[in-house]
Image 1 (spheres, rainbow, N blue to C red):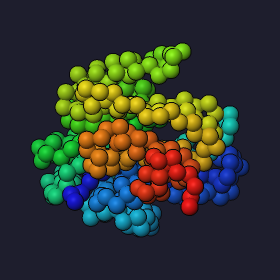
Image 2 (cartoon, one colour):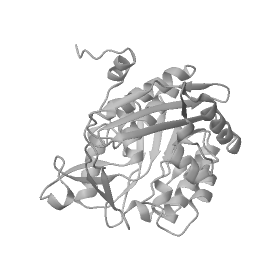
Image 3 (cartoon, rainbow, N blue to C red):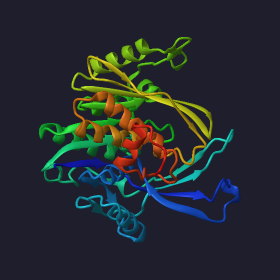
Length: 342
């Protein structure tokens, strides 16, 4: 089995215990996570041979992040050491009508200071057949965006499948740039494009009217088919366009579904109601890992691919922390509506 390569930043997540606010906190729970590392953790947990490419500071926090990756059998052969600090983000849990709050402290992190030429991409991609990146990495610094482009071009030249989770974050993209121009250029090399309505609008200027995504008769498939076709036309190298849709009723209750377009047909997941959410962070990453796993293991059954990924996303909402600690067998049981635990 050839390797899957994911590339991005892993950070420390610090959260007040329970549902305390930042102003009340005397202690913080620590976990490690990040968009691309979460995908890598999940894939390794699914039994896939996965390497995570990043840069960590040569200090105790960098060492702890490395140990966390190895604990989950995630490949760390191509992790660079250098820089001064590990990125941090603080998370205040939301509940009912109080929204979750996130504060980033990742400026000048080791990963944000990477430069082209630091990573030996030809060696990294040797014996690999898949490269995954997200819109988080080019958002953290101009040089990180340059490295992302460097990696993508080499991956394309070497024949790897390239997947992209657009992952727009309004609190990032703080350096002077045109995010639409950068992401359009990067995404033009991708085979699989995953995003939601906000990311598609910000990065590509294509608007999916969420108010019209459902009609009185239910799901508006024509609207999603239209936007998927526009994305496919904009990025002719893509062969799968996948859109997720989330409606937040409260911090504890979300409605969610996804669609997949393969260039001919539009597939839809069932409509989920995530009630009593434990932790929504990493839900999209769990979905992304399910898409990658599904396309590799069910290459001709796109409905099963979408259903597997959607159940992985659903499962993650029951788990505290960034990472989806679900096995393939657990998700497959959910596909068969087996909730017995016996």
